[in-house]
Length: 467
Image (tube, rainbow, N blue to C red):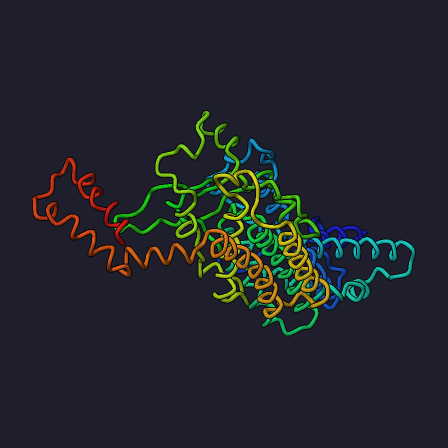
């Protein structure tokens, strides 16, 4: 009669035989234990059952953590998709975490394996293969005896602190894996950390390949800066008294973005998942007109064609850097995403098109998929810093080359620099000498505020002809 209750307790359900002992005021932890009202149990059997049902309590706590994170992600999962969602979610989402949801998915895999082991154990007991003795049950579940309670202890700070997310969560898992000691526990923690890094790689793919910042909870190291212009959580204006831009805590949401496609499925985002996302920043004038009631962003006062976004639109947050990601690599990621945004959302005669070849995006996507595949399957969940930095550089280099080609060759940067040196830096001394001679009579008189600009323009034309 005890066996069914013990099996239920192993799945986190207490009863009359296995009871739930609440936490005490003197620091005693909540736990499962064998009811003291069973005099027929010998002390060794009672101790064995107490050790055994500690697995059930760990399962109970971890299962609740998974359910809570799934519930927290429900709001993001039900966001509308399609063009109408482009401008709907500029504010940071309250609660939730992509990294915690990825961690919960990894924990769920462990719990599913444990549930399968309990089911097999029940079948073996019914067939008489395994005797219904505490020692036999403990032996049958020895593979989880270390891992499951230790995972519960390791993740207790995560369970108790819903705000532990992003880089601090990754650092916590990294430190726990280093201090694990037991190979089984270390492998389990590495696997959980790899699941969290999968969410990082999907954010990385969205940013470096599509120029879309998928960071509704402020966890990615690329952060938007208020006052930079644009959509998706980045706005014009709002600088402090010193003139510094205010930093917002989270990024925008891509067109048609769904958390399950970016954070919790088994593959890196497909190339077309975010392919239409974010095109409104520079090129999708129709979407901007729909949002602004028929007014294109090109007509907006103070519009600078993205100049402010490039220089002050996004920045690297040092406290958001995960373990193993150094500042140079983070800045390379920042540059790649900014360049992709500029190249894929041009204005003027190129509006609605892209200045970046499709092969660049496809190669970057494959590179990130390969990196995630190697670290998730072929490297025991260990983060490979060298491979990561090489992959980031492989993404940055062709984007930078294309941007340099457009600026230096097509936009004739050398010609503009020469004009800057010649006129603004006084490289053409003969021009200014001629200008001063032509404007001598004008400069001898007090300036007239109403006509000063026109008066100064008059001697410029003959000075330019003479020079």
